[in-house]
Amino acid sequence: MITSNISQFKALLSKELKEAFRDKRAMMMAMMMAVMAPVMIFAMSKVMIKEAVETPAIYLKVSGVEYAPKLINALSNENILLFSDVPSDKKIIWDERNLTLTIPPSFNQDMLDGKAIDIYLSADYSEKANLSPVRRIKSTIINYARGIGYKRLLVRGIDVRLLQVVKIIEQDTSLPNSNAMIISMMLGLYLLMAAFMSGLPVAIDASAGERDRNVLEMLLCQPVSTVKIVSAKLCCASLIACIGVLLTLSLTTFSVSFIDLTKIGASFSLDFFTISALILLLLPICFFASALQLFVAFQSKNFKEAQSMVSMIIMLPAMVPVIMMFVDDKPKWLDWLPISGQSLIMEDLFKGLPVSWLLMGFTGLVTISITILLVLLMAKKLRSETVVLALS
Image (cartoon, rainbow, N blue to C red; front, side, top):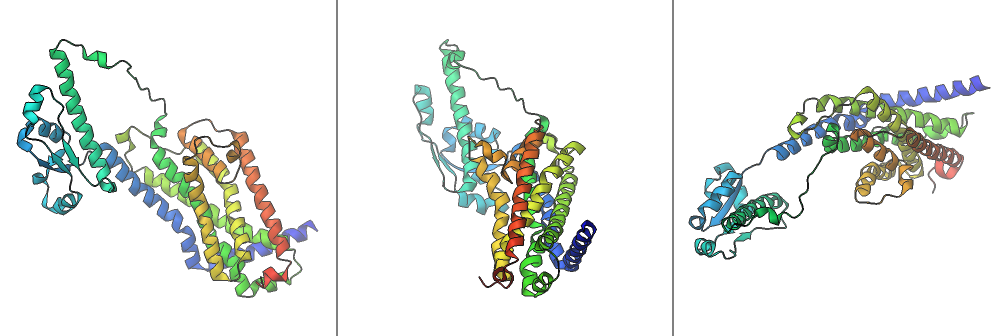
């Protein structure tokens, strides 16, 4: 009996795998996330490191340059230059940004009299591209004014340390690989999305696709239990999802090795322990994602509706971690649920913090339990003509 059941399952699984790998375009779509994720991480990391290390030139329209030469020099030292110095290829961009600084003619006299001086900084604060330049300009002017204030106190014989009642000494206790958290967060997000996207075409084709081709109806006429049929489809889609996750992980590790993280005092490497923990963590998610996609696809009336409905599920691995970022006091049950639990454990893993194997095992158990429940529900629904013939 057991041998017969195993033989039937092997035959069903073999049939599903042959159909999955036969469609080359579907397989290319399945592996697209695995290929695109490392490229996106590499490109975004390069841009972020460049912005963190370099201070790009800011071109400012200044009215009254002759009234405050020392202030202009302080701005120039921070790579904040006059609009007259803007290169020809960037002139249109900075002219549209229209960052304007107005220095009053009474600047020198007010400085001698020790009066407060009003300097007007004009910019479109609703424009996102202006936020960083405006922040740098304000910071430079404030530091310049603070320096003059300290000098005035020193001339009057007042110790400037009186202004520093409390001094904060910052001590960074993070590990070197914690400084690469942006890359880690992107990798964690892409790994979760790879688990959902890689098996997506196979899950849709094995459910709604087979129903449209009348293959599902013929399959259900065979003396095979619906649980075996659903399990074979699940294993096939999950296998493709696992391949996508492994490919994403390996290609990302390879691409990140070409990024010089030492410029921001960070290091990023995935050792055997981290890779093993990630695989154990994401394996249940691959099965859960495929089961959820199959379940939704079976409820759809046709292939196109299944594509629309199942595609919405892809938003889950992107939305859940983002939502958790804005929750300060996270409920304890989030540590156990699929996606949120794996996301939190991956965060600790990338930070180099000790991983709770008990929590990882419990989260995986909950994920697998929900997956089994979905399989049983699908097996029950496939016994109904309403679902098989899409009559609902």
